[in-house]
Amino acid sequence: MPRGQRGIRGGLKPHLEDPYLIRKGYKEPTICPRCGLVYRHRRWQRLADFDAAEAVERHKCPACRKEEDQYVMGIVHISGDFFKLRRDEIKSMLKNEEKKNLMHNPLDRIMGIVDEESGMKVETTSENFAVHLGRMLYHAYGGEVEYRFSDGQKLVRVFWHRVNK
Image (tube, rainbow, N blue to C red):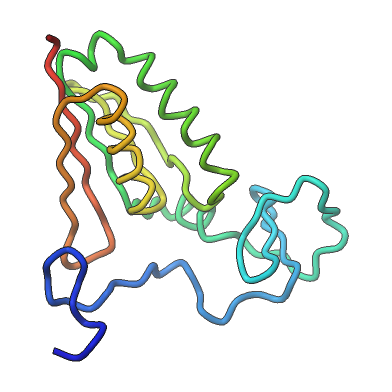
């Protein structure tokens, strides 16, 4: 197997790329007209003191494009009796974690939170953020967490479950 083809998840498949991240980059500075992120120094950033008139171009950032296309890259399934008793608390914690994470990586976002009969489903714009939310739930509340990575596409499903004890 050629070097670089061995996957980190135990598979022997090439690394899957995010189809919304382009390699060539944009002219700097470029601003996202939808959310206001600025592409500068080869990455999308939230800059409070940036004047939109300074922007050379206007392009939607990858996260906004994913949200418009409903291109989910991470799904967190939350279930169990414990969750049903603390639904609002956990939902608030997830939203707070998204706000905190926006400063570090503004492309990692929660696309939607869907209430289901058995619990809740959280859709994210990246695999890493879904894994992060699963770890956060596990460290905060315990329970059981399972990560399932897709072989054919860049998608992760995280299952967190805890019964009330």
